[in-house]
Structure formats: structure tokens, C-alpha cells
Amino acid sequence: MTTAMDAAGAAIRTYLEALRGRAPGPADWSAAPARYKRYFGATRLPLPSGPVGELLRDLLGLVRVDWVHPVDEQGRPVEGAPRITVGRPAPSGGGLYPIEGYLAGGGPGLPSGLFHYDPVHHALETLHLGDHRQALTGLLAAPPPEPPDLVLVLSAVFWRTGFKYGDFAYRLQCQEIGALTAQALALAEKQSLGASVHLLFDDAAADRLLGLDTAAESVLAVLTLTGTPHEPVRQDDAAHPPRRSPADDLAPRPAHSRRRPTADGLAPRPADPPPINDRLPYLAALHAATRTTTSVRDGGLASPEPVATRTTALACDLADPEPTVACTSASASDVCPADPEPTAPPGGGEEFSLPDITPIRLADGIPHRASPIIGYRPEPISPQTLAQILAAASATYPGDLSSISPTITLYVLALRVHGLPVGAYHYNAERRALLRIAAEPAARITGGPLAPNTRVGLRSAAAVLVPVGDPVGGVRWFGDRWYRLQQAETGLAVHRATLAAAALGLTSRIHSDGTTPATEAALGLTGSRRQALSFLLLGRPPAGPSLIRRLPAPAVDGVGSGDGTTPTTSVGAIHPPYEGRKENHVRQNPARP
Image (cartoon, rainbow, N blue to C red; front, side, top):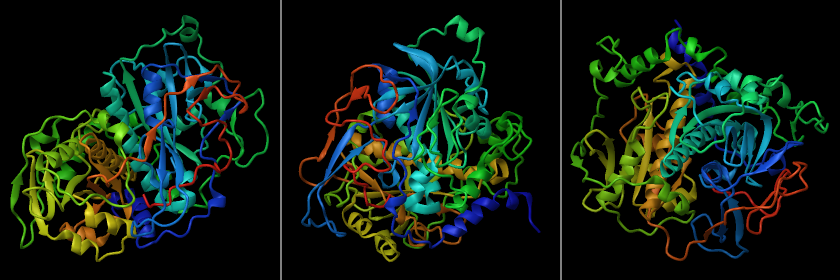
């Protein structure tokens, strides 16, 4: 007999089963879509220096150049010319950067409007003038109590990652959304801005408002920001909203249309990614199941109960899948049992208290973040360093999920930590302690299928962070959308650990191929519903000078026409436009995510 909970999580189970044991095939680079989205015919506004421009540039902009010398699968140098890549501030699976940014609001030197961020020119493409913040916040399950100064919307272009990774791209994109929200929160803290992450909203209305073809691109997160200098909304804008909605003005042309945009609206260039319903059927089906088609504030997620009630009860479900205490309090922690600690097998069970720490400003790690492909210096790190990284990864954050228990639990493989025996550990954030689960975890993990560069990294890394969670643990309250929420929080925790490590002089890299049954066995998870969700190697950077250079801030040249022929900004020696299907001067990073 199929229960309501089984039906709610059916799309997740189908997706996970379809991906089980599937190895990625060779990428067809001829199918790669345009790396950057453009709105031809839109007025392009160069971003002046200030909080808005700095936030967008350090979130989605082109900010770094990496020189990568060729190495073999074991990390040994081989003959060949260095590869030069232009990168963005946050990591992305395969270096493909599928996330687009849209901004509602304004700022010094900018009118109030709805914009698309153009990272190539570090400019805003004007989609529609007028104040659209209220229209966006009205779609949120938990809107901020006061109108925000800015609303930042993050969407995923599915085929941009999917052409290489297939249906697995959805996991990478949801985790990348989490990484970008972590980056945005760190930047907001640096600039003394208030920020809140919103993962619960009316998907269909959000996509319509931006004029997105939901079979090709869809909104996955909304961030609200306060405290930014902004232009006062003109009275005529407030009193007279646009005669037509942005969805009317911005509706994309049909896929592969060769028509140029006309005066009745703007369209992405014809080379934009195609719909993925047939190309990525499991991704498409899961995303469709996660979407909210009615107002979430009226119970449009998976239950007629209000979001606050659902998040309270969800905290109980995560703490105890078969609760014996009814959870009706506004504070789940008052009546729900604590998250049960894992059972340690023979050889484990010892608990190690971590030392007191000094808080880290995560934004300090942004300029120094790197993803080494040839391993680490095999040198130990201190318990204080590990404690700082774990505290950053497990910290709470402002958003619409802040009232529930974390959707993930953190595990650590301690390989080279002073005073800490080698082993697999469960991290208890409340007590700042590590419970040893097993000894010599690396030997068990390397017995499973791993990419060569993952094996190289494991031999020299100091530690590995492994977020763990139940992939259907919250479907009773959030339906299949639970998958998106959990993967986003995974990406957020992993990226916070990445930034903390960079701020402390370490380096790190995500190896998604490390989330195997062998890893789960090493963590004592075999037979449970919990799974490894990511695999972050941490260690000391390889010897030698850094081959990453940060690009200078763009110099504003003037307002472009948006026709793709007149650059509005210059970024070092990079010259736009980049609207081709694939830049011939920037090769894709072949390493696995």
C-alpha cells in the first residue's frame, strides 16, 4: 500500500535509483550551450563601484585567471602548454557556471528596476524599469518583515551543466545554489548588510515574473538584502506600475528560434540552451515535482498546513523518524528529542572535545579560494583549525529554514590532525565534539570506485568533510522539494567550510565521486537511510607560487547599446562579447566536480 509520504517522495526515489551506479560518459562539447546569457536589445547599465557592484562581482562575476599546467591522472607533470581559464568567485561543477542572477531594486547611480546581471561586462541588463521588489517578496513563503532594499534571484540553466553530467546536473546545480547563498551571506556580512535566504516560494510565479522558459531555466533561490544605499523610488513608478508584467515583456522566443528580438519584447540569443524534458528526463521530472504551483503561503508545498507549522513538525521528523512526542509547540526544540548520535562500531566510540576558537570572517577567504587538482602538501593541521572549519560549516544562517533542524549532519575523516587519531568522526556542533566512528577510513574508501585525482588527494589531504542526510527525511512536509532544500544546505555548508579553510591558509576541493557506498560504510551508515551528499578534501596548498590571479575591477567605459557590439566595461585583457556557443580561448576544466 502506497502511503502519502511515499507518493510525496516518489520523484526523489526515482531520480536516485536512475543515477545509482551510473558512470558519467564522455562529454559532447559540440552540444555545449552558450556560457553566458544575454538579452539583446536591453539597455546595459555599467555597475559603478559600491555595495551592489561589489556584491554581484564577487558572487557571479569574472574575477580570476587560473594558469593550469598539464598533469596526468596521478598529478605528475606532463608535456604540453598551460591552460588558461577565466573563473568566477565560487566553485562550480566542471567549471560550467549554470547559475544566472537577476536583481530587483536600485542603488547609487542606478534606477529602480528589474535587471539581469551580465558577468562578462559587469553590467546590468535592464529588463523593466519600476519597483518590482514587492512583486518578488510577495511570492515568498516567509517574506521579510520590512521591504528589502534589493532582491536577488538565482536561477539554474539546466543544460549548461546537463550536457556534460546528464541528470546528475540537478544535484550539482542545487548544491551550487547553496554555495552561492553562502558566498552572498559572507559578502553581506563584510559590507554590514542584512541578508536572508529564501528557498520556499511560488516557483511558477517567480519564473513567469522573469519570463523564463521553465523547461530550460528556473528559479532556485531568492535572497533579500537590506542596508544598501539606494535611489528613492520615484512617485510615478510607485503609483503607476508597468502596464504589462515582466512576464509579458520578457517571454523568451521558442527554443532555437532564429528570430531577432523586436520592439515588443526581449529574447535571449537563439543559442540559449534547449529545454531538457527529453534530454534529461529524470532531472526534468524531479524539478517538476519540486516546483510549487500555488502560493506557498497558502500551503502549496506538500501540505495544507502553514509553513511555520510544517517546519516545526519537520524538526521532529528529522530528530526522530518515529516520534513518540507530539510536536505542536512553536519551538520544536522544546518538545522534540535531540538528533540521535550514531552508534559507534568496535574500535570507535571515543569522543574528542575540540578547542575554543576565534570566529572567522568568511569573506576573507574569497580571494584565496582554490581547487587543487594535484593534491596537497602532506602536512598536518591543528585541532583549532579543524574546529574553526567545522564551526563555520555548521553555523545557522538567516532564512526561511532557520526554524527547523539542519537537513544534514557533518562527518569528518581526520587524516592528518595533530592530536587526533586517524579515523572517521561524527561532529556534534552543539558540544563542539567529535565522536570517533571508525579507524583507518581511507583504506575502506579507496576500495570503492574513485577518480584518479580523488585518490591522489586522499593520499595527501589533512581531512575530509562529508555532509550526510536522509534524502527523503523531509518529504512528509515539503514533498519532493525536500531534495532541493537538502542539496542547497549541503552546498552552503561545504562552501562555508571552503571559505573558512581559505581564510586559514588552506585549500580544498569537492570530489563528488567520493559519495560512494564505500564512504558510507566507513562512516557507519550502511543499513541506514542516510547518505553521503558531498566529499570535500581539505589540506595545505601544494608547494610553489599560486597560479591564480585576481582580475582588476572593471573600468566603466560607458553605457552600451546591448547589441553585442559595444563593450561597456573592460576586465583586464578580456574583451567582450562572449556570446558564442563556447569560448575558444577558455577551455573547460576537465576535472570532476
